Image (tube, rainbow, N blue to C red):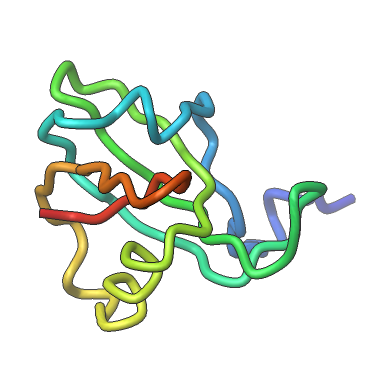
Amino acid sequence: MKTFADLNIDVEQDFFVCAKMSMDDMLNQKVVVLGAKKGIKTRMGDNRYLLHVQLADGTEVKTFTTARFIKAAIDQLNDDDYPFETTIKSIKTDNKKMYKFT
């Protein structure tokens, strides 16, 4: 009898297997963005982006975001633009905190 491994079926992974980290915990640090998934629905809302990030110590983490500037930047990237290095910065306006790549 065949095993599942014998079938050579490759299922695309639609998530990143690593710990979750808040974007606030990455602020002002150089990070490498390894990839991103768009339009993720979570209990926190629809159309969230999932970023796969490598920290300076080599640890890989993921973070969900609805940050307008980060989503706009990700929307302009192609698959071959990954990985890229950036620093995530916070912009405070009125009572909102916004994030961007620099």
